[in-house]
Each structure stands twice: as structure tokens, then as C-alpha cells.
Length: 242
Image 1 (cartoon, rainbow, N blue to C red):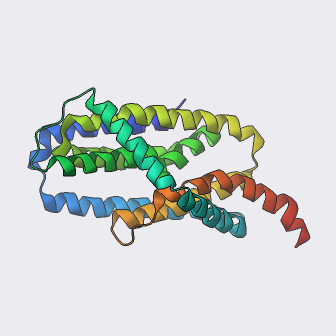
Image 2: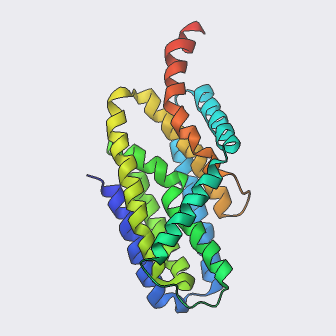
Image 3: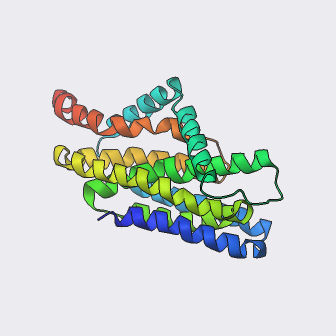
């Protein structure tokens, strides 16, 4: 049962509605400070995941190699192009809200949260983990953050934010299903190293949220694909030689 996926999508719907109705009562100072708290929470989630690491060399190699591939193929740009497509589909369902910001700022902000909600490392990683192990903790934690994030963004963007839950559910449910199919072919060490790589991406995400350093988080996502194969190669073929 994709409990975590349902929590995430529901939180966006609820947050979008609440922000549309009550956003005018939230000050700019509140929005800025609560985003810093989001970053601290993401940092804690990342540290918890990294602590599960079993094979440090494999985790580091997977992270560096995966990010290198992501940068070479411009994976982040691909994510942004998919975000533009989703944005156009959403505008086919709901009208753009009259806003105090320019049309360009409106479009850029909407694209940002589509990528954040649908293609962020936390959601991708959490969905696969949820499908593999049945542990929904990470996705439920993300849902809490998404609730308030959707509420804040919908203050400016309106009810269009709630519709992002549709593509997010489709993407996360697909990853959840893939996680379930992958699980029989994994070992506990492979799963823990996969979680550790996801934790590093979570740490990078948290630094972006608090504007310490703008890590190329989207380009780091391919590292999660490499994490388990490299962990398996390390434990099976390399460790016995050491």
C-alpha cells in the first residue's frame, strides 16, 4: 500500500487549498523563516540516511560518478523541460491566478515547485525506499514539509499548486512499484548504501533550501541508479581482495 505516496499528494492538495484561502494572512518574514526550518528538517533527514552507510567507498564513488553523468548529460535540464511540459498541462486544467508578480516570475515559480514536488531527490529516493522496504517514514516526513511549502507558494500562485499532486502521484507511485520489483534482487547492504546516497542528496537539498550553496541536486539523481550495483560490485568482487 503506497501510504507515503498518498500522504505526499494529499499534503499538496491540502496545502494548496489552505494557502489560497488564508495566504494573505502570512507575512513575508514568516515565509522566509519557515523555509529555513524546512532546510533544517531536510538536513536531519539526510544525516539519518547517511548514517546507514555500509560501504563508504562504494557510496562515495556512486555519488561522484552519478553526479558526473548527470552533469554531462544535463539531467537537470531534462528535469526542467519535463517541468515545463507539466506546467502547460496544469494550465490546461486550471486558470492562472491574478497575482502581484509578473507573468515571467509566476511561470518560473510554478516551474520551480513542479520540479521540487515531482522530481526532487527526496521524493524519488523516498518512493523507491517505500516500495522496497515498506518504510514510509521519509515520504511522510516529506509530506509534512510539502504541506507548508504548498501553502506558502499557493499564496502567490493560487489553486494551481494543488493540481501538482496529480503528476506527483503518478511519478511517485511508479517509483514505488519499481521499488517493490527491485527488492527481491537486493541485499541489506545494498539497500543501506542506496539510502546513504539518497541521504547525501538530501543534505545537498537542505543546503539549497537555506541558500548556503546551490548544489546541482537534479544532476545528482543518477547517483541513486548506480548506488546498488556499485555496492554489490564492491562487496562481492572488491572486498574479498582487500
